[in-house]
Image (spheres, rainbow, N blue to C red):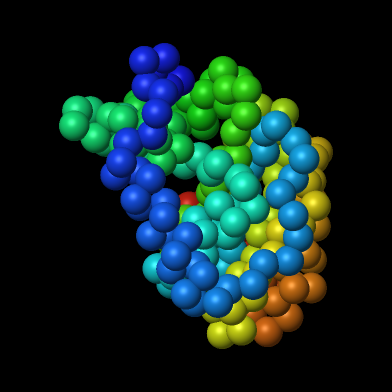
Length: 211
């Protein structure tokens, strides 16, 4: 689960990819409000997830802030010849073939790391209607680390990071706080109105049907 000790200097490919991502971020003239959290471990969530430019924005933004982001990937992606590249890019390998293994595996990886900024899109995919899956929350709560919300508006080229939030164990109560944060910064985005309804229990969580 941890990066091999014999891998030290980043590969030329990973350095080139990060340089390109940062260059695209600057080329798009994105502007980011808020600074890097002064904490060793946290889950960095980004929303809304509506375009492939989301990845460019958050990748470039975190590098501008001096954050070394991490992401979760299938363990099969970490095989040779991609091993060094995947780790250099901040990848955390997880075996998704076993049911119920994902969250616990990520929690274990977080526990083994000294520093981690795990980037997760809580909506899951771009096709989401705005409701959030709870995996990011269970990871944060299980690992005992805070959640840092980040928002983006591609029409204005602006985005920002919020203050770290400690989870309480009540997913919907904490989801309401996150929904309020996003509604404050993106009052024009209907997705966050639906997110607030999810927090109040007015719509079911993704993947879960009411009785």
